[in-house]
Length: 110
Length: 115
Image 1: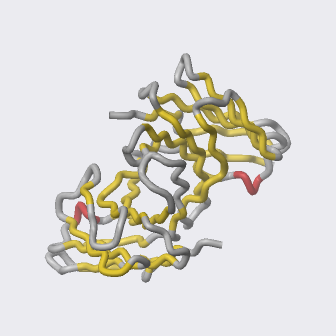
Image 2: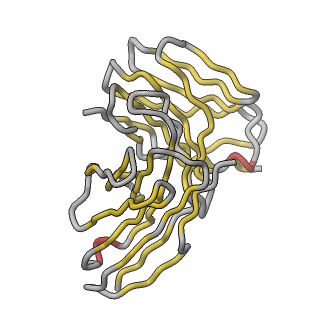
């Protein structure tokens, strides 16, 4: 089945860009997602990308997809302290349910 | 906005008790899911349901069961709670059929402690 891997921790300074990386194993994954979890809360969908796209931009968020390397990244421009959270990458292929990575904790310092 | 409501934010139970975790969504979603979240292990799917009265096992169904008698409600049942079931439990819902772009909406979670 699908396996999704992410680095566990990222620390940046306020105002810098953050890049969170993710790799997946199933080349037939059709939808790829980024979710955000703030402390004490459930996950909320940030953005998603279809497998026929290479890039998607949504305000401060840029998602890049490299299908050849099965690599997904989330770039947050002008990172703010309010962006401190756990970010989960998730992939979906065929009729299976979503497979989540273990999450990357982003810490933004002033 | 979609709202997924989990009945308890924190729950403390004793080993061997039968535990019910309730989840209600208000957007007429067909699909509902139960996950548990543990440090270092991420989210693991316990059970899911793509229609009323239907249920399917996820990756870690042992020790759990579910009930979906109404479209908006999905209950997770721990038949005999054990300490290794201490965890954060997250309910989610989505619309659309299998294989489609299925965007999940999550509840705030129930932190269950089994003593």
